[in-house]
Picture 1: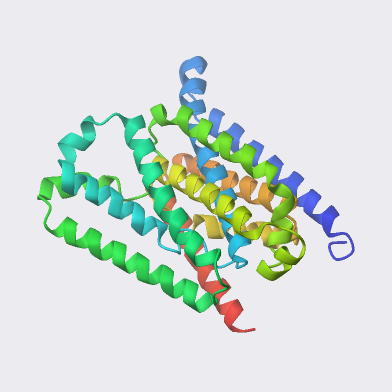
Picture 2: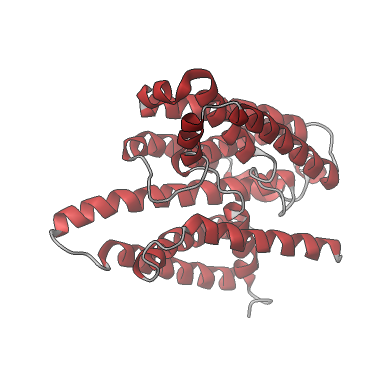
Length: 322
């Protein structure tokens, strides 16, 4: 049935994923709840909303980035975005000291970081993907070079930091799904909502862009303008998710790969919602398992990065075997 009716298979998969996502959310809100339900639901509801936004932002940004680059191995994180985030955080502590940074309003800091990350990444990605077609090896090499460059600058500044300043810095350099600042949720929701509205207006171009640069141009897509807008949207989503929880390198790759595999479809009407639902299941369901079975003995980000790293290696090996 999956070969004859790929759309039917994709719809069935989406329904199953939706059911699992709803079960994960219900379990997150109710399991182990003690005391006043009004307090429990409000407290967990804020945390659930944060996880949903992060899952949505990472899933959508990764799928769209792979669409623009026409490659299922590349992600914004693989191209050095996480290293750029580390550099920004290190530079803030290096220039202003941790005492000054802590006094900055979280929303102002969030907007400034997001604007900086978006500006730089949009310029970088536009140069890489909007101009002449470049080989995969060149793109990966450029990503590695930029990542090493950013990490080298960060390492240099970290080595000359005061030990106390370095200890404060370390807390912000690792992804944490348990310490999301609730004051940033409203502004994050507004930004993600605006990106979604713009993205929906470009939805009809996604499947065409996945055919490649030459095919998209021949089919009437304003390639340069469309890709530039999508790259800005991707940068905004990644900047928001990174500013909320910290850098997560392989999570987007994991959910995008699973979405393509489970749906067996290249249509964005199937892949995008599947990736979002898988990301929700991984984050919300994973958090439930972490809290109820492991009692916070390990970090969810470590498990996700481990599984994502395996998927990344598998994709490279699969591509090399062709």
